[in-house]
Structure formats: C-alpha cells, structure tokens
Image (cartoon, rainbow, N blue to C red; front, side, top):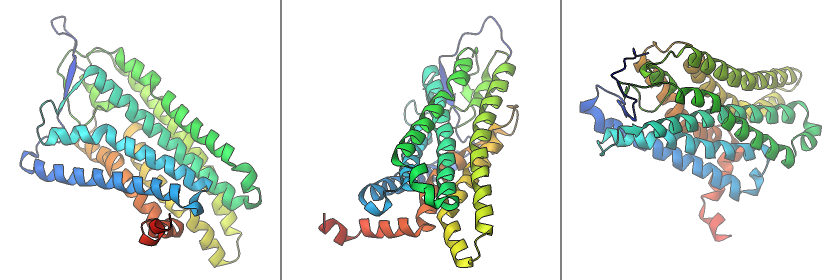
Length: 317
C-alpha cells in the first residue's frame, strides 16, 4: 500500500511493466508467446470443430470439453494480445485505462472461476459414467448438461462482482506502474493508497470458496472412482475405465496446482517475478497444454481428429 497525501491525484491510467529486464531478448519472448498463443487458438478451435463435426463425440464429456476449449480461447485472449503489444513497443501497448484494467481483471477472474466449475462438472460426469453406468443416461442427460454448463458460467460470472466492486472503491494516487503483464489483483493492491486489509480478506475468502467448492466435487468424484476401480477384478477393464478420466485428472492437477499457489494467500509482498512465472504457466501454458492432453491421452479424440482432417471426410460432406 502506498502512503496517501493530499497532493496526489487519482490515477486514471496504469502502465504495465511486463517482463522488465529482458530488453535484449524482447523479440525472442514476443515470438515465443505469439507462437504459444496462436498454437492455443488453433488447438482449441480444432477441438471445437472436431466435436461439432464428428457424431461419435456428441456425448456429455465432449460437450463440456467444447465449453472448456471456448473458455481457454477467451482466457488467453484477455491478457496475451496486450502483453504482445507491450513487447514490440506498439504505441500505448503498455498503457491501460483504470476502467480497462478493472474490466480485464473482472473477465480474467470470471473465466478462471468458470473453468474451476467446468472441471468440477466434468469430474461429476466421469464419476457417474464409471460408478453408475446403468444410470448414466438418466443422471447426465442433455438437459442436465446444459443446466450444469449454464450454472458454471453464471456462478463464474458472479464470482468477481464483490472483489471488483471493492477494488473500484480503493484510491490509486500514484505511482501507476503495475509490475506484471496484466492487471492482476496482487500488484494492483500494492499500488493502492487505501487500506487494503478488507479487500485482501475478501479476495482470499472468495478464492478459497471457489477453489474448495470445485475441488471438493472433484475430490469426492475421484474418490468414488478410485473406490470403484479397486473393486474391478480385471486389470484390463480397470485400466480402460481409468483411461477415460486420465486426461481430465491431468488437466485438473496442472490448473489447480498453480491456482492454489497463487490465490489462496493474503499477502501482496511475495516475489513478484516468481508470481509472473506462475501466472504465465496457468494463463498461457496450461490453456496450450490442455488440448494436447485431451487429444494425446484420448483415443476417441485422436481418432476423430484423424477423421475430420482427412480428405475422405470432407469429400463425403
């Protein structure tokens, strides 16, 4: 928190430092992050296209996967283009208005929370498929899937409303340099001239509520899945059942590991540079890896990718 004096005026614009200290390698980093961003867009669009075109994948698990792919595209697009503009020195590339900064933080938090709930919904889908296969059609109907997906997006949208409202009530009177590549809560709080204790507490509680609620659903689902698998006598059948949720479990581990580290904290004084590295991992690297994980560890997706991108498929359309 910055000390407040009457001579200071309210900040109307912020400057994002990004990755300071890499001036000699800024072009290399620009190419690296641009490649990762384009790769993320292509991969997730491919998943959406494949699920939409291949009738074999029109099942609840892949319905949720298309929602996840749409979310990953928006998730990276909220931060990466602005970061890339800063790397190449586009006029105003590092500047962002006060309203723009809060909007970016709102959308980023909204999408992050929605992803938590979508991963929980996907865990529930796997639980019913493995533990109650005879009731799968009744418990995970298309109507249920649509309601679950809508609930994930709605609760995700509601999640940042109070934190962003409290952020808007803080005074920012200078300096206006954000030591990050996007408007994250922690570096913003470090610039505030107001007492941020209450804001930090609310951020902590909201983050904890989202992570615990969604992770509890995932933990209970996978606890029941493991219990069911242990009672399957055939090793081949056991592995076949586990393979249907291996990709989802890998994605969950990557995403939740970094989120628990980053956001279930109350202090803004931790290493900013280390936080940037972790932020890159969950906001850029993970969205790029998720489609690869789902395609490489899922025979149905691999097969559908081969069919959709073959010449025979398009000739038959």
